[in-house]
Image (cartoon, rainbow, N blue to C red; front, side):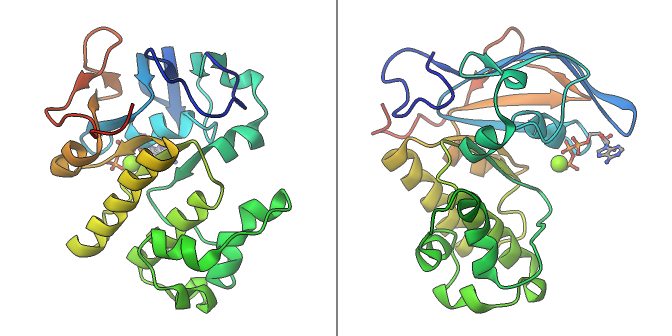
Length: 241
Ligand SMILES: Nc1ncnc2c1ncn2[C@@H]1O[C@H](COP(=O)(O)OP(=O)(O)OP(=O)(O)O)[C@@H](O)[C@H]1O
Ligand SMILES: [Mg+2]
């Protein structure tokens, strides 16, 4: 397994992107993930389960927006607690279920993360990838529809040039055509940049289109037996690996 800063990704073998061992996690003082053990390889994994089953909590553990009460979460073989949290979040970017934009212009939001490390980005191109017209760059972030905000959140995450995207119901507020555009972007990034995805969705057809395997959560427990998530019936995108 390479270090967190390794580039290029593994070319052979099932390099484990994330491993959770006996993870317990709480929200508001109540344990919501109970003894979850999982291994997620590179590629695209869908996390499925009913509302309240702990999907968002699981996703947040993967870039340390939340910490486990006990157990271990590792990224590419290294415990998350041994990694610099900001470096981790640039490499493993989360698009949250509820948009949370900074006040100001859309462009400022997209530039924010890369700006922290002195890098400028092509805001128009990033908005286009996320399915928004470039003219949205000048729009006030406070005055967007939920679906538009979702796409700005995606553009903001893509601006970090992450190696892994954690997507929490990223298209739940989008119409079919816009959703298709976002899905095409995700597939394209997987092919071009070998981006890995961990995707929470209630849309089983979307899981089939985008993911190679599904992890099921039921009342805070991973129901797939053993460590291997079950494969989806969809084959992996043909030119990846
Ligand atoms: N901030 C919070 N404070 C207290 N409890 C919370 C908080 N956030 C979530 N929970 C509880 O933790 C459990 C898991 O929540 P989580 O958001 O991970 O579920 P989910 O599977 O993502 O649900 P959904 O599909 O509705 O988004 C739920 O029972 C929820 O009520
Ligand atoms: Mg959720």
